[in-house]
Image (cartoon, rainbow, N blue to C red; front, top):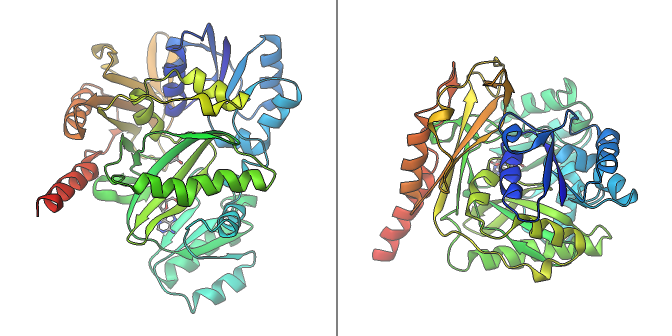
Length: 433
Ligand code: AMP
Ligand code: GLY
């Protein structure tokens, strides 16, 4: 099969790496790809938002399957465009992609389907939103409705912070149209976990759980980022919790979307808060998580191309997933300054000292290959990933590799996976008493 993968981040490198392992893959193109993807696929100079050009490329090259990495083209309707042209493409159509494209629509959907989520109000006028704040309980959470590259959520500890968030979103319009409406919602407490579900609109499979690390600094301090690391599986999901998540959240979501005339085909990312009252949905995304994918796919033994095809062909029922039972940890190495301003073009040293084996892979995100050198070209630069027998060993393995890689002003967290370890030691203590 000829496969076209759209995107250029760490998530897409992990997808490309996995797709390449399939005996079904005869040729893999990545648009636009990155320095790491260039090593395993043919990169094409078309950006993820250039839908017409992507379609023309897919037709010209007789692509058998297109896989979309990022959310923006999905929300723009790339799946509708390809399907109308008779081409096979993995991902939700424009209507189903609204689960990520509009947080307001997603919250209203959850409310209609009785899916547990934080209580919320929707505002499209700043004066009314501010009036509500004067009688609200803090902390609370303010979210821009539309796509904001993961930056549209403000956790506000007091009135001042909440008013500032509203000013940023609705007055300064930092997210443009995406901030026309806001959600003000209850702040949930608990541990977070991410679940990826692949569906054909009717049937679905649930991938192994994972946990992201959104904050920039160790101990979950500092600003939110796209994600500074992840591990899989999440030890916070044990016992019958996954069955509860399926019964209360995943199954009603897939059924609800079908009932609404927008069957969900593709990968659904469910961001969860595991509270004392059970699992709550924080957000839906309509694509693979980044960096969760880098920690989940190395554990997947099943041929990913078969899974992607089954989603497109309505054959999810036939898919059985097999997993490597080791733990996997991904540490993101970023450019100093990220998620704010940073410099590109720094040469990355040490990559040649890291042979790719079945239990260690360096996924590239913001990199480019130039004159046989790999240079930084983005905020999140690399997703260094390692497996190990248990999370502790995976952490040890991953940091051993991280310490061999150098570039100017490189930054990474030192505690990826530590939360998982803590969870395991707590539950061991509990089961012993
Ligand atoms: P989202 O983009 O909706 O996943 O939000 C980004 C991050 O904000 C989440 O991963 C959580 O850490 C946090 N967050 C979002 N909504 C809430 C909420 N209702 N309560 C507490 N934290 C939240
Ligand atoms: N890791 C968070 C996301 O993919 O949105």
